[in-house]
Image 1 (spheres, rainbow, N blue to C red):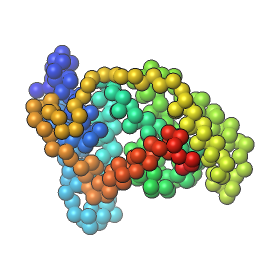
Image 2 (cartoon, helix red, strand yellow):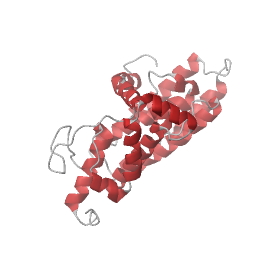
Image 3 (cartoon, rainbow, N blue to C red):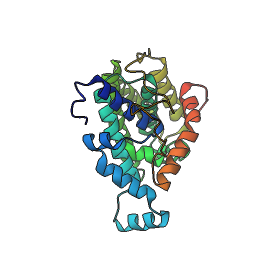
Image 4 (tube, rainbow, N blue to C red):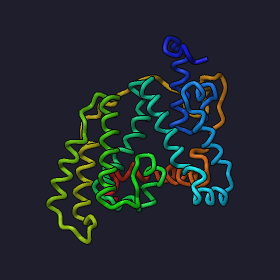
Length: 266
């Protein structure tokens, strides 16, 4: 059904719209697209975990019978983002803004690894998505966040044509880190304030080259490319995943204020 998507502009736009809706507002991906692009197995597993009783899920996780729902969700998300960015090399601004939140949080964790324990601002789902182990040492967490930051920054360079931020940011971070006073292995308040200032400068005072890219995609509850409204799905699926996602959405405005300069500190 979708084998000719490269030559069929209508199908291409349909696929882009479906992926965008799934990533931005949690709508389901139609079976035909799942099957053709290889989402089916993880999708089936994801919904199997979603429908599982909480106690059964916990027990089977402890015995290693099933994978972590968040890990399955992360695989699906990475695959959907990869495909969307391939089909739509210059995505809409709201998609870029959503990813840019990730860049900022990764920079925050790289500079202050203990941030991973701040459950109000950093969800477990976010850490799993970007390969950050909150039980690792502070140095390891910082390195994991830097790796994820650099990878996401490179995607932004490709999608927007802007200059990369990573080298400048981490050079500045290491210079600041070399001059700070360690306090029990934790990041002191003065250093955190300097870092926050650098992060705001890097992400908000540079010229914004995002402009308007790509297609005008469907808004929530509009007609889908399939010719009907698709029911909105909770995302992620399992109870644990839903709680992570709801927490993230609930605090999204606070996140934006913190990095916009409207808030004095983190």
